[in-house]
Image 1: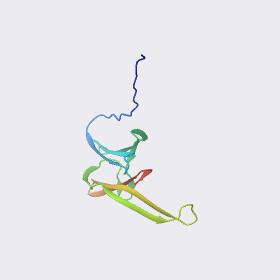
Image 2 (image 1 turned 135 degrees about the horizontal axis):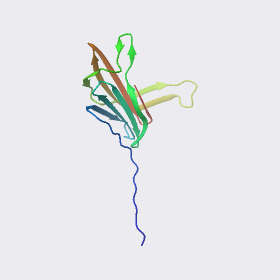
Image 3 (image 1 turned 90 degrees about the vertical axis):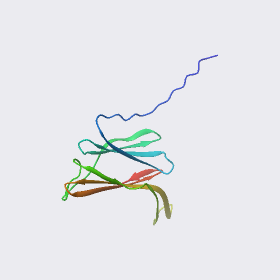
Image 4 (image 1 turned 180 degrees about the horizontal axis):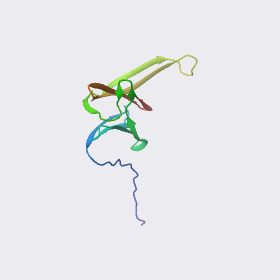
Length: 129
């Protein structure tokens, strides 16, 4: 008999240093978003679909007239992951009513006395901030 060979392909996210990490997945768990805050206070995120990276290391943050929230952040709080339902009507589309089930989480950071919140929603077919 011939030899049986099993192979597996997977992605590994490797980093150096210290930091904090949070994650949230879609209701069917096919999509997962990983959020990281590194030791310089820079936020990053990755998105995985079926354990494969589909959005590589991306910067999390925003620059506004209230401040630069791309670095120097300090983690404050994480909300519970909750189920959400979005419903809306479309005009002139193939489908007139849309109902989407998802999960939502808010991460709160501070910098120089100001607060920066990121609310992310994960659906079976995508994500939104």
